[in-house]
Image 1: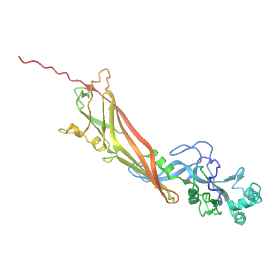
Image 2: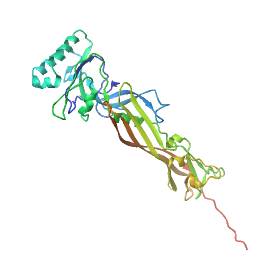
Image 3: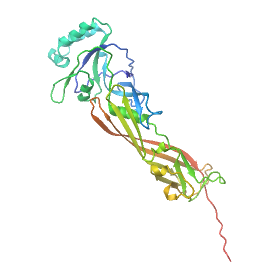
Amino acid sequence: MRSTTRPRLALVALAATTLMLATAVTSSARDGASGGSGGGDGYTVEVSVTYTGDGAPGSGGGSHTVVVRAACWWSSEIDDGVDGGDAEAVQQWVDEQYSGGHHSGAEWVRTLGPRERFEKAVEDWNDDEDMSWYRLQCQDSVDSDLALDYAPNSVSWPNGPDSPRIVEAWQEGTEPEPAVDPEVLAEAARQDMVIAAPEVDRNPRSAALGGATMVNLPTWFWVTDPAAVGGEDGTRTIRAEIADSPVYAEVTAKTGGLSVSSASGSAECPPEVALRQWSPGAANSTGCTVEFARASVGQPDGFPVTAATQWDATWEGQTQGGDPVGGDLESLSRETSITVPVAEIQGIVEAVQ
């Protein structure tokens, strides 16, 4: 993953400042609102995920890139105007904190840990100019448990029963990957889920009447692609997994079937009925049928008819700490519009003398 939007430097309400020393990397951060799947205001990242399931893009599997809001991340701007890649500036900043420049020295010892840890880090830094400091940042809504799960080798310092402090020792290596909330990942997967609009065929389709059906005659409709109604059980799934991360999300979409509606007739058909194609001798009660109450006079192309599906979406997944989670997502809908000409057959009855 790599950053795509510059973070707003707001610390977690229940998780205090965390610092680490890591190999400097070039950030592609920029100001502005995010875009793409699952994005939102704040700090967003491009995440490489593996999608699987019958609702996965393409044939499933392989790597896909989505843009999601990060829950926690590491910022190379450790304070206003203090660049984590500037060893001298960081050294001065640390000295100021421990001498009570911004807070009391005792407060910073509780927050940052013993000063010797950072002095040792700076000594090692002097031997490697490619090192840089990073500071933990999280969205305001992120609780301390997620931050503690995310910060590697973290130490919780008590600051009341519900407000742990986090202390992070420096370490060598690249900038850690941001943490992603599995619900945000689920929202991205839901957006990328492949559910086709329902293409339908129908019968009768009279060649003598320009492909029309007839007034008050049951007209069968059926979907030509079973996936458009999720097969007979009406479900589609997509699972998103982030490489080298315990976080995953699996989305299940379920539909009640096909809705066929027009100004002159409509029907609601469960998936197994919507899949049933007309055949000679088939009982009309077994199909997805609509009876048009009047002819499409004045509408040369026929009545506008909408074939639609509505999908309820739920998700389940796992957090950074390995806890199972899940819930409901915004529903999805798909629809196709067609026109159906409807003709009226006139019959003449002669009296027998």
